[in-house]
Length: 174
Length: 179
Image (tube, rainbow over all chains, first blue to last red; front, side):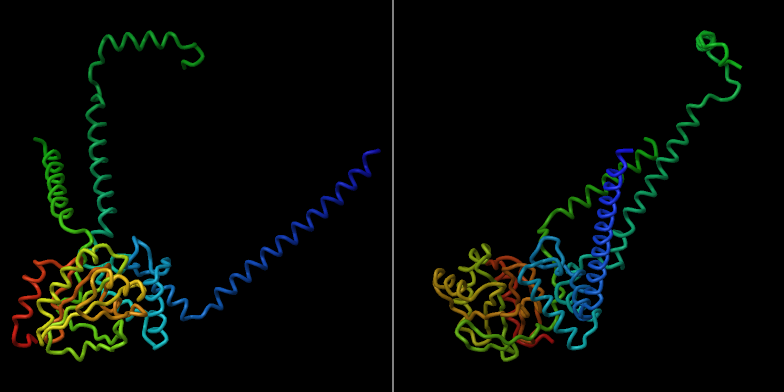
């Protein structure tokens, strides 16, 4: 029983550790909720600026959105979006403005209309068509390779089969 | 030949045709939706502090060239621009100007000194609004605006002798306002 006090100390240490972990968890949860509160409190104009600029291509960058880019042009574009929103313009109208000046290319996602549907639906359609072809091909092959019922079995093959069966331990053969 | 061989052959041929046409030409060429539309109005200061308004130039053919000192092709096209200014600058029905795109004025001043000065005015686009209004993707880009204030052409890349002959000259020859 000499080891009991030690075990008691161990438990106390354990409890202290647990309390610390508990505090840490509470701190993380609190911190998280604070961060969450910050996004909720964001200026609604800024949220809209972000929403619009995420859909626009930064004209001078390689495949980067205006929102992500730090180039001067992207900063100026965001400024312009902000000014227009403050003047009461709708996000849709601002998007239209950019398209009217730069063309559809300014939109990071091709619009779902007209020939653009080819880009959106093409991969899915190609996958389906490929699956169909593969399915038909495999089914035909399986049918072709399967011997018809009642067909005569090759004598050599029959003999081999019988030999193999004999090699098997008795209890496995019903 | 089996049907599937015919179908595969046709599909491969179709792809080759698509690539033959799709991969030719300039991949950076993006057609401007502004061609055929009224040129966006602007008012800006020149490097020397004078104000230029596009509206004041109605009735003239206007050539607007976006450029920057960090752009190599702009350096290449500079002599051609100077030549256009020398050949047509004297005409009362023609105006041309440069607009500095995403650049600093001190650098631009130095650049113009190095390249032998400028025969035509250059404007500052301090907040980038003119560049955005004209949908500039990359410099150099040159717009030709006719007498009615309509954009007739957007040249992406350096202006050339061909540009002068096939774009600028014909617009200059139009005597009547087209719209």
